[in-house]
Length: 78
Image 1 (cartoon, rainbow, N blue to C red):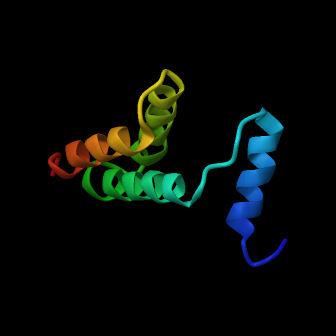
Image 2: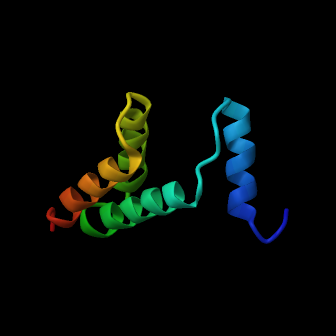
């Protein structure tokens, strides 16, 4: 793998499940959300909240707006 290990992993994983790999904006939104949940709620909440984001987006929600709302919720959870 090259220096973009994450990008290559995401391309391979996305191809394996038949979806498009996330672009940089989506990567940032998901990683920011995971950070906010891990630091303000609980570490195990980060991947589970990312899963909830994916379910919501799969049902038509906007990834940017939904991740921002979940991050706001997580940062108020302290």
